[in-house]
Length: 192
Image 1 (cartoon, helix red, strand yellow):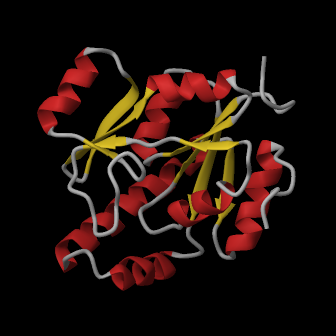
Image 2 (cartoon, rainbow, N blue to C red):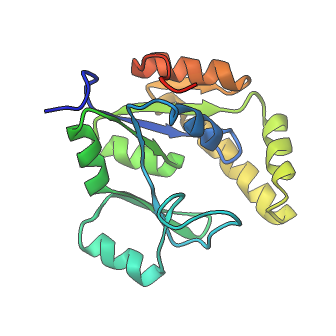
């Protein structure tokens, strides 16, 4: 029995670092039907990030043990750290009739698509690579070398957009969120 008349589904949002995935996901969480997938990672927490809320922060050994136990739907190494989507919370959300929102890197999304994981795959594209450079530089969290590596990876990821069900250009946050809401079939948010 579901908690709503909305059929449970998986919404996978990915795109290059700095394209606005996290901001879009925060907006989508205003919908009662949306449950956020908390990924596991071996990277260190950034300032303000909370274990279990933003990520499940694991050591490399803990992460590898969970791989061996079959606890991940997918996992990948990105920028020298491991990331993965846990299987149990996804099943619970779908069973409850919710939309399970997975913010995932392009490599992970394509891995899930190759495994034929049923879901709605949305690629969030920046308006331009110059805008992307400005967004990443504005974070102030990367060295120039890391910034260039992320931009090169963004170009590679951008070429993969054709493998997605939908491409949403994030040139205006409200418009992008509305477009994704319509793609998924979510009603207007119940919170103000």
